[in-house]
Image (cartoon, rainbow, N blue to C red):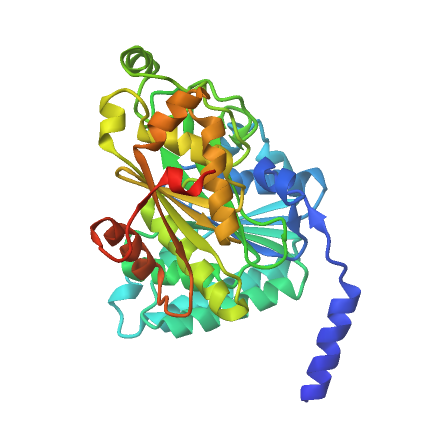
Length: 431
């Protein structure tokens, strides 16, 4: 029996050519070349972040290729049609041609009051496989999975979801699952279990700012393949375009999204040397503290499995520099960002800018420290020498004693008060 299974699996792998197809989301299509045919992907984000629009953009690409797409939704069909119309997408016409099959699913209501709700939730996941067998689509979209993953036993969830994926993938169906941003520790555990088994993840972070468009940051994270790596970009939701990263920012960059242009102009006239308008990048490698910890833990796991070393470099700005109008933490962050590569990660904590150099050596750290002078508000040598008196650094390289991200960050944060490991003047590292 085992030999037959191995033979059948190998025969399937040889007969199914893996290729890339368009996702309908330019961040993926431009950087990864599309999604893998037969791959599985997750969209994770809060309400009103553009999750359903991404699902519809995925469906549009299927319609363009005359592929059958099954769209599972909690929405009323009319509401889904209205959402599609906002993309100038006449979903009804494709439904009439049986190219898009809309399956409305009812979220479980009273299940969680039952003695063993997990058994019933497994059936909800099994229903996906039943519909797949019925229609034989090329793509499926499940919008959204959040109400169906309230499992008590996370191992049962893992097994049920893997079984569902196997049914889908063995038929070479490309799948897109949409799920809400986790708000509790249990929800984080559930999302982690689900996302670690798919081909890639799209994370949406919604921003609030005085703009006519809904905006945010999108990050695409590969689990399997997509060796180009992780990419992050600002996005916005535009009429008839949906979720797009193909736009020219019409506001100057700031780490305070609610800061209006009028306030920024006023601030610019009151402080010292200013940077040029922030250069629009195709990616952003600046993360909040929790996301930075997650990336750092991943890097530690990679080090323990492969030995690939990395460095954490913390730049601390003396508050007196900002008081004197010499340099702000935003300007220092901007200079550091322009000195790093796409793979490096940045986190700003109070008066510190912390950089994860993913392929770090002492030389990489010194090169980074040297390069930031090229992106400061002024290149005047006397200005640079003065500013460097207000910047100190602490370099920490991973080793076998490191346990987790929290421990590394605690070492960084405690260094300024330590007699043994402390911040050093930046001038000391730059010739």
